[in-house]
Amino acid sequence: MSTSIPTEPITIRTRKVSEIDALASAMARSRNDIVNQAIEHSLEANAWQMERIEAGVGAARAGHVGLAEDVFARIAESHGWVR
Image (cartoon, rainbow, N blue to C red; front, side, top):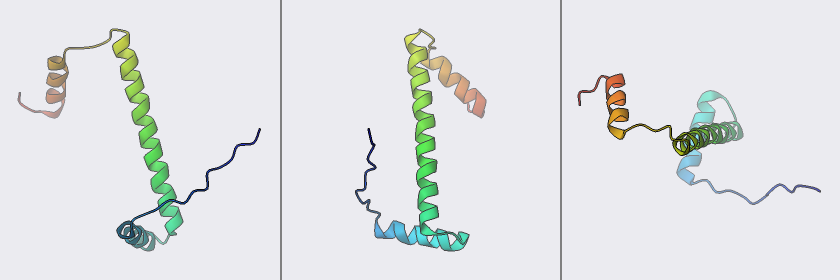
């Protein structure tokens, strides 16, 4: 069984292409390198977020939850915020 790779084109807005080109020039890299790195970073960040969400949902389903007020208090304390 062969797997086909989608080949439909993508569109990048003109303003973004200019920003990509400026960054590529400043870094002495190709437009392709910049775009592929950005896509890779985005996919990694989204995968990490999905893992954390799934872990949180699993914890909640297992009954490992805290009161919202306690969570907010811990966040405020860790940042030195006064509540």
